Amino acid sequence: MSDIVIRVENLSKLYHIGALQQRHDTLRDALMSRFRRSPQSTNSEPASSDELWALRDVSFEVKRGDVVGIIGRNGAGKSTLLKILSRITEPTSGRVGLHGRVGSLLEVGTGFHPELTGRENIYLNGAILGMHRAEIDRQFDEIVAFAEIERFLDTPVKRYSSGMYVRLAFAVAAHLEPEILLVDEVLAVGDAEFQKKCLGKMRTIASEGRTIVFVSHNMTAISNLCRTTVVLRAGMVTYQGVTQIAIRKHLSESSGESQKRPLQDRITELPADSVFQLLDLLVSQSHSIEDQFVSSNSILIEIRYRVLQHITGLRIGFDLRNLDTGDIIFRTFHDDSEQQLCNTMPGNYISRAVLPANFLAPARYEVDVLVGIHAIRWILFDQVHYGFDVIHLDGVNAQYADKRPGLIMPKINWQTYS
Image 1: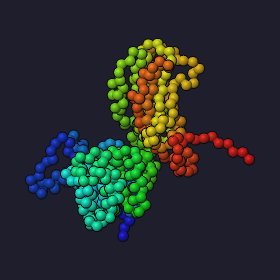
Image 2: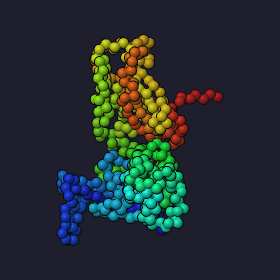
Image 3: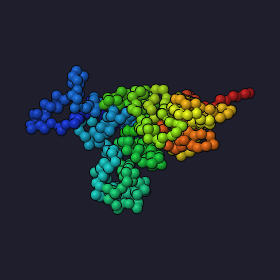
Image 4: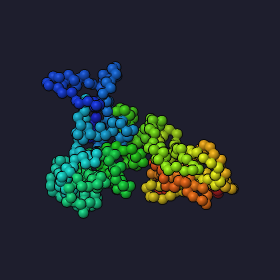
């Protein structure tokens, strides 16, 4: 028997934007339209403005027991690909071969009937997967315990919160023993503890020889879970192979394409202050996306502001917080190395801080802007935040791929004597 459980060949999907799908009165009309809309025609002819190729000529294979990541920016075609693999959406052209029972966790609520209770939906999903009632009974208690919804088991799921929905949906998809598990970014709805729990369960599934296809924007999760990764860009595969190389390629392709952040809206809405105005907060790393940084490169934090009148003792700084644990890693101010209070005249300023390479351990972090006048008042405290992920691609020592415990991962200078 072949080890290939997913074979995708020249897969393409066309959507029509802002218009109803054309109605075909005859089979001949439908077939002629399909041939006219082949993806190959886009190479020589400009696409119509109301057409979007979500996928174009996508091909790859997944072996039994592989854990494969699918990454790419929003709109790259990741969710469309999983919908086709799940048989929710039909491709415009190309074919998919699946060998094994498929369980999928896509958008919140996919596969659940809102009027049925949690208990009833567990049995409904099991039946859809082709399982006998006895098989579902055997897994039932474990599903309920994993989802942590015992009190609401007999409540219609339309009354569940999005977090409860996701917990139950993942528990059902993971415990009803699919041979192929498809998981979309829906895990981002859950809290940090639940996400860790889900990733642990997926590792267990993979260790049992079952196959996982995992779509995520969380590069740390992709790096920790996936052996190989497919990079999608504008509906096309730009790389398939080693996960660390795939992540580097994705970050390289995505740098410089970032949209203006909602952070600017929060800055604009800050209450007026007679002496200080925050203009911008920039957190960046060369050759990276705006919120996905690698641990082996330095991170620049830049606070731009306007001083409206002379201030003695103005302090510009930030807290760096680990969002996975809630701990403040450190607090720093721009005048930490000064020997006296700063005298700041009116004008525009930029204060920069650099977090050194090989300093932060992989985790989710947040920069919280702090602005105050020493011994008088806070101007900004816990009002402007910027979140980012630090991902692990290389060990502190490049010869090893070790993933070390701890809140920070500094590269310490050692000396050895004999």
